Length: 274
Image 1 (cartoon, rainbow, N blue to C red):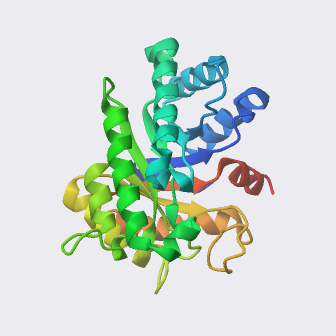
Image 2: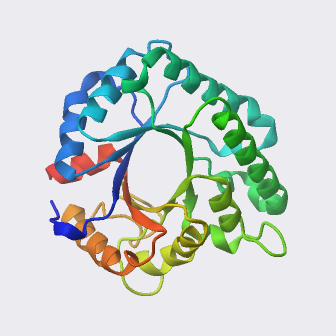
């Protein structure tokens, strides 16, 4: 594992999509997180589950290790106005859980992964989908903040600052202002140079600095068919750690930059074992 010394980033996070893992290998998950210095976990929630105990046990133990846990959900369709009911259902599940779980096992925040640019409608009428997406983010934040102090963050692509929200503002800038923080899906496996981690991250990091909001840099460990420059799946964890440190040494001077998140726990753990 990379030794950061006194210059480690404030946040080291990961996504956990497999909720069954809570029941199968909770102890292994938390041991791995502690070993790797993870202090935030985005934990996917199954809205059909009415048994809160696996979540409660996991979160309480994570809190005991100094690890925060945010409720993770999302779907590309959540970028469409007609799916606001799904968003409301997600928020409702979290609020029901919070009431049942108690303070020690409560989620620390809500984290969404929406990605409407994966929809076919994005190519047909991007401006309309952007408007619907922005409306749904406003809806999400309003519902989440009602009667709670939960922070709300989202995964965003690194190029989001290039999409206009209006004549004077980008979607990236608008999202930063609406949310409590973002994770930038900056899936590159090299730090320095054109189209690298640093160059792609800096525009949104500067937006975070402007707004006083944290921007966390997402890196990919899962295999990708989008090119050899995307994932650390082939080069492994040692290469990832080197590129993280190189990136950190440059980005740490920007207050908007707040660390890294590795996608995802399952692939990261597999890579660490190999």
